Every structure is written in structure tokens, then in C-alpha cells.
Image (cartoon, rainbow, N blue to C red):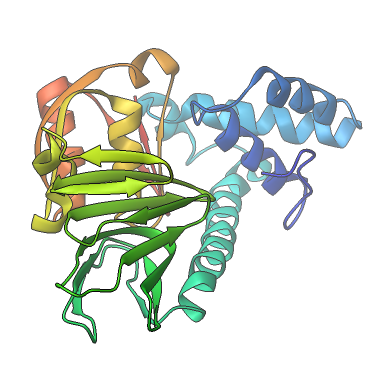
Amino acid sequence: MPSEPQPILDLSDAAIDWQVLLHSGTASAADRSRYQRWRELSAEHLAAAEEAEALWGDIGHTEAAARLSVVPRRSRRWGSAIAASLVLALVGYGGWQQAPALLADYHTSTGERRTVTLEDGSRVTLNSASAFSVKYSDDRRLVSLREGEALFEPAQDPRPFVVDSGDERVQGSGAVFSVRRQGQAASVVVARGEARVGERLLAASPDAQAQTAWQRGKLIFNGRPLREVIAELERYQHGRILISDNQLGALPVSGVFDLDDPHGLLRTLEQRYELKVTYLPWLAVLY
């Protein structure tokens, strides 16, 4: 989200973008201040902002949603504006997401998992929307994780097995480990053996099976905040899932969920925690 959002199609779309950000659970005080300044740029900005705020207030309220079918023409256009905004956002996101894959030897699309065997016999299991390249030399085997997450099972070889993932470099020739890259940052989970991360030596994690359950098609949560559960789920499907407020986002969630049925996770949350979900094009809102 740019510091001062610009209209995609018109001010209506920009106002919707602001509402998505402000209700995402990640908006900062600075974001809210920028929004207030944006609202005050002109009378047209203010009108677009007020309409977007009213629309967001209607999400999840059955009676209000029913009234959308009889409101004046100017308000009805928001339905198509939402769809247009979200489709454009998805196209932009898809283009960005494909960029690492264009430079990679191996990649997966959103929701796809794939296991590949490398030239030296090493096995790599890629998670959703992930990409990596590999380069062999006489003194090492170098994997560049360009995006996403992968589980590495290096084959025996005198050359070190090294994974480069932005700011982190992992060496784990005798280990089984996963690396997850987010921007230039990376997190490492060792499932077996020991791996060196920079100057640190990491041993196998006691909850490695749960943290790498994605390779078996499962997501396992034990008292994780709902906002973190939803952030994980978003990695495996197109579109966005938003939570109505921060208090709900802090709700602790436990359970084992099937990655091959991401919508089933939302249904389970509805039933187990008495939540409601409103579905819009490329968007689901929990409240």
C-alpha cells in the first residue's frame, strides 16, 4: 500500500483500498493519520470516503445488506466498484507473485505443493507460491530460495549444501530442514540433525512436525491468534481474508486443518468459534 494511495479507476476504488488496509489488523497510527489527510483533500475525497465507510459498516449485517438492493443508484455502484478494485488488486498481486518464478528453476503456484529431486539426489518439497534455483560447483551445492517456503533433504555429498534466502544463509548437509522466506527475512525449522544459520547452530525443533505439517497437506495450530491463522490460510488461496476487528484477531485457535480444503477451514471456524463470514468477490470478511 503506497503512503498516499492513488485511485485505480476513480476515488471510489481508492477509498475501498483504504478500508481494506484500515480493517486488515495491520494498519498503524501513521496509516490512520494518512487516511484522515486523504479524506480532507477535497469534497470528492470526503464523499468517496464516507461511502466506503458506510459500505464497510454494512458488511455482515443482514438487514443492511438486504437494503443494498433498494438504495439509490449512486450507492449501488459500490458492488461493481468492489469487484473491480479487488480484481485489479489480484491481477497486480499475481503479476508480482510470478516475478520470482520467472527467474527460478522450480516453482509452485498458489495452493500447489511439489516435491522435486535434484541432480545430486537431494529432495526439495516446495510449499504454496514458492520458487528456487540451484547451482552446483566443485566446492558447494547452492540453492537460492527466491520466494516462499521449502523443505530440504540433502543427499550425501562431500560438498556443503547451502540455502541462500535473502539475509540468511543456511548450511545443513546432514540435516532435514525447512526455510521460509518473507522479503529479505527468513525463518528456519530443523526437523532432523543440525543446521548452521549464519554464525548460529540450530538443533532439531521439538515442534518441527507441526511446523512442517504443510508438506503432509495439514495446518496445525495450538492456541495461535486468529489473525495468524488467517495469514497462514491466505498463503494457500487467491483473494483476501479480512478480520473485522483486532479483538477478534486475538482469538486463540487450535486444531488440525486440511490444506486441500481451505474453504473448509473457514467453515470449521464458523462452527467451532461461532464466527460469521461474508463472502465478496475475491474477499472474505470474518466477524
